[in-house]
Length: 361
Image (cartoon, rainbow, N blue to C red; front, side):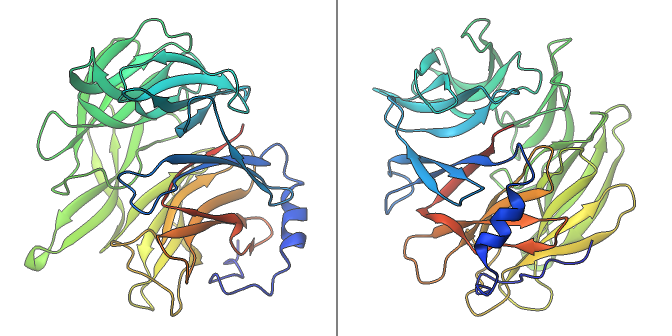
């Protein structure tokens, strides 16, 4: 695949209608939900959610009865949503219809976040407080039954078969990466995350769930922060680097788990970012998109590129890109067609402090 023809958000010469016309032929990945913090201060803003129609570029705000939506995750068949919505004490965990209507609270201690529906549809993972006290990572059935606390963890990520759950274990400092086996109920540490105090990069299982890809943080010369993407094998603990660099971060993986999306510092321009695609079988890596240009911001210190998501059963990817001249960390959605080698200018309108994506299956 040749590099995409669009290398910056100033490439408005591409007719967006033509691009979207080609995208909409890649059914069924025609819709995603994006979430954001709509206020001027991310810590205190009211969370918002929007449905983005890929075939038209039209964006509609979702207004669930809960008064807000964060961390949306689709059921495997795309018929329902799990999300964290507003309750009197903060955020509860809700399951609703696909449009956010008829929400039913299945966990309600007021601290729910980071919801993730398992690929087999049997479980929902989320973070919250245990019985209103100790924080933790939880599993619960979609009907609210069988609530169980796994660990004091965060950022859950499912294996393709839904039998393993990877997470950042916060019981140790610095953080460690652990995998929970649903068949045995046991959690095992598989890798050390590194000295950075917060999760950095996604956790991605290999296609057969026998290995896990993660971003390891390190401190280089002079105490400067650096990172590399690594692969740890479940059976023997073998841990090897698959991508190195001063600011490498794992963004996600293709639906078949054979290609990783990485965020790197642009080697040709200071303070610019590049998304690259790494074939884990051959080791070949190519550039997908760059923020190169006068509006480029620091890859480590900004939200220049965020919320990368691969559409299911489709050659489409989407990510948030900061929009120049817009105050308050505003961003728009860029769509890229990997088969046609095209990328769109930001579509769907800008949102403030983008927080997440969820493609509809």
